[in-house]
Length: 262
Image 1 (cartoon, one colour):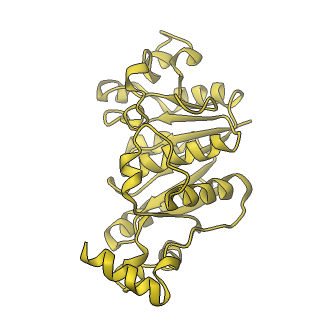
Image 2 (spheres, rainbow, N blue to C red):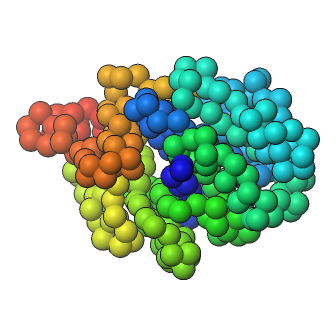
């Protein structure tokens, strides 16, 4: 039976969809069968982020309205045969989608996949509750700044009321140079504030933005960071990418100076 994980955040713009996609790539690269379900009705962009928009024939509303089988709506990734997406529809159908119907669809997928990752709408309105109700676990994505943390804290409080099996913290867009210069919060401080277990720290790198539709290059810090995140999700390995290590010491101070002047 599949692990059902909702990837959520308190506010938009923290990279939630990007985290969903790259975590999916990392888990699929470990041999797991993974489906990414876009439940962000109206602002759906999971297919675009993966470069699969031209392959979409049916979407989640077609499945829920009986116009096709769930297997017909699934779109396989171009690079990894273990990775699929179930694309979403526009805002017009959002009000017609019930949590119960979404749960039934989830159960249909659960017998075929090892992981179901829900790309959840930002905020805490009905779309958030609809997605969370289908999941057993949650990953809360935040950036290390106070505005993002305030919204994330609200989301964590609501998630606890759902009595989920696990709630994990992912700190995204972390910059080691700013952390070493006391200009950005350390991941451990974010974990202490939100009081949920840190399972991933993801560095801010241009390659993440530029890799739209492709897996991250193997030589990048982001690739390693997502590998650690996937291992934590799958095995609970406890490995966290160290974003400050290369900015420590004498050579690290030089790197900080160079990065700060760019």
